[in-house]
Image (tube, rainbow, N blue to C red; front, side, top):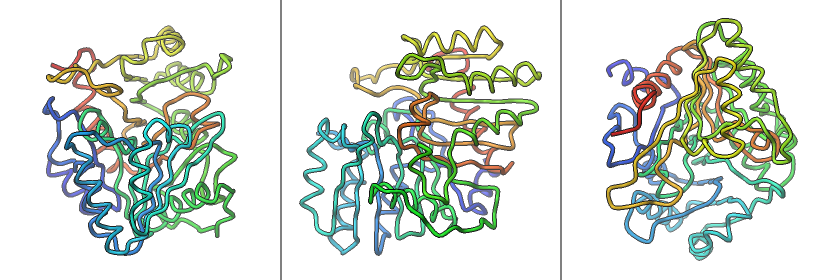
Length: 358
């Protein structure tokens, strides 16, 4: 526990999380995402830029409510707020967008990824700090789903994230000023490749490279894994990387939500299992007060290789997430950071490797 606290104090990155509040699996040494979001919005002085799949508050008081009020207060004190959401999902949750349009100093735009979606989940405050993770701007993400993200204070990483935002805000490729990273331990990656500023690399080759370099272990946690694209064509890039790692003697473990047991997702995982990948499924029980739609699952997306290299982002692993939709993540080549991420994997997920939550 002391290790986590010391590491967070020294690092320009801090791992943050959300867990189903009724399951009591929260780690007091890993900050809560909802708390962080309020803190960042409360101290904003000039700008808040939000890029998210959709916005969905609950009709009742919930974990998103203080975040929403903090964001509104920022607009009232003169902070310029820009909100970018997916065009297709904007019709599913129109009310919060309509409210935002009535706020002072606030502008809303819809991002059209045509045959896909703007699936990223991130924001930037004052061009100095950022959040990147798996959380949608949704009350369920903050209190009913397992999510992970990073609070980022590294200026070069924030610059890369801002470049992605400006690309989507203007809906045109950004020819950003190239900058040489002085710290190669951290790197922002994103998709799709045809909509990236020249300061950001495509996430899929980076993820594939981490797996190909594995010597001892590969631990993956996702909502879903699919080796078919939307046209039902077989897509083999990550299959090959994971299976070849097994053939080299690397221990490969893939933990996914039980939502992945249906359709082609289940077939995809069966292939990996037949080739020696250890695939496990997690079932999160319903809330004591009854079912909550689109919740009660593991939604975070992480990769940890050899306890030394890792990735965290918003992309599930399938062709269309990497080639058609907007996703944003971070690659870390830091034993300290990856140990923190792997420890949380063990505490929350690997401890439940072969069982459901109580």
